[in-house]
Length: 170
Image (tube, rainbow, N blue to C red; front, side):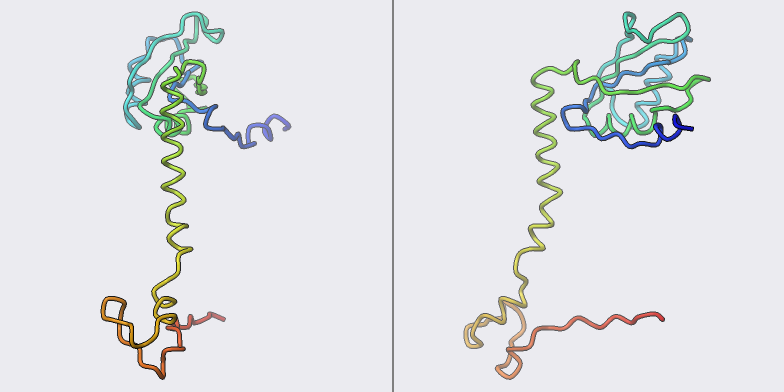
């Protein structure tokens, strides 16, 4: 019972622990390298692969493979889909191999992450900027033109546009 609760615990990876290199362990030793590559290619582009003959998880019955994918995002998807899945009668284990990365791989990985975070935060910045209705209210009526929006008359210049009321269900 305690072992089941450990399987359900989420594992959090930092950007330095993730990698475009994945190690597949406990693959049945039936010359299944091409089938494993086909499964990975369904998700993303494979840029390199090799069989790990001196890996500690390798025996007469199971093999281990190192597969390099095009990016960390693709490796994340492959790991999520294939980790602990049944593959030709055996449950394969997939984990990242950041120790195989070069300095250039690490640099490009950090640059990709910085771009992704910037892209993710960009809509938040746009929402925090003042809206057009606020700009119209602060300008004097005589200085407004058609480029800003519809003409606001002095009697209604202090009123902000209202959003329609939502109906509540009871």
